[in-house]
Image (cartoon, rainbow, N blue to C red; front, side, top):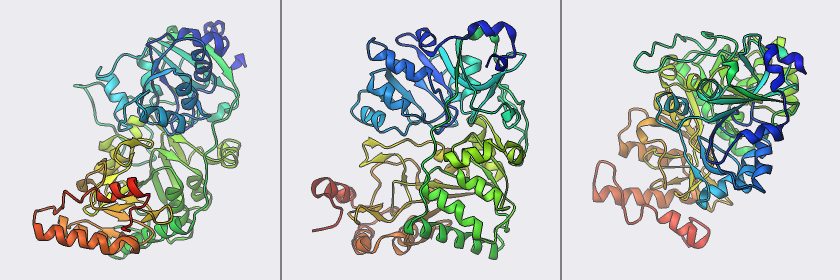
Length: 496
């Protein structure tokens, strides 16, 4: 194992997770690697959760995105978290956030590193970063994600490294590590295609910062891959038919433009649908690479993918990392303030496909809150892409819970993406192309194409009566949240 420490003077830093975690003190700001359960701390943060069961210690924890192995939940349950940012998916942590026991900052994923470099957030006291090995110059080779690790390595006062021996050392070279200059001296980021590599293969790190090194051999938490069902397949079909029409009209070619797809079963269904389409030589410029990404590579449909992490099932993990030479020239992993930077998204003309919890008749999208008050996961990178994409597409099922919940409403209970950032809305019922439409036109298009039949008549009535009252964006404010209120009182949005 010591062969993975190629800088001789760091070998005496090797210790146990239990000893390393003693470096973390109450009130500290901790930055950890990890992006959508990939490349995260496998032993140090869990050891902190164990320590917090018997010792009063609370930290502010920053990561790239969500952590795997239930680590967020373990930390929350042990009372070790004072504040968390910028994204999470853990049900235990979610409950603690919604009860007010843990403070949560829901940030665009492109912004966390920027705020740290601009000193708009507290300094990072200690970073915990998973690596494949330490190079001779002290620089570090990330594993299955990059996330915010470059920034944490640069700005943290001390660093704990977790060397994961389950990661093959030939992971070297799949990362493109580029750090933009601080303001006011920032330069153009010279990426003009997803496959452009502009940085170095390792994360620079001052060896004097390394306070402890811990070895682990644990794999990432495997992604939960759900097979496409009737609804997700219908959504995928609508999107693919839309793309085919865009090609027929001459707006796109059969190669489309670089695709971004949020994580989850809908995105997976859409990407899987490309396998049996006429599209070819596709590219991705996204945040996360899922099973469907590598399935498309194997099918000869996808030529290159850029992201910040690889989050896949166990079978796909073994296929990719057990045969890395086959895939290494097909994908690249970057820092998330590069993968999600607005300027590149606009320059490359990204087609962004993200998931909504609900949207309203004018196209405003809620992607984070249940009932307007309870956080689900977070905005993630959807806002980075929606505002700047060539095409901003949001998808959701028309109705759920035995059709007791409509996901198209008079007014969203929380707004993450305004109507100005939304081009296309898709449900299993149909697709609404909102480009070039005024608010009243948008509303009618959405009602006609996306609403579940059980709710269509009532939503049309709401809109018609609102139009009689007038306004550029007609609403009946006394009724606009009545569907949410009805659900809270009766368990169904349907009228009795």
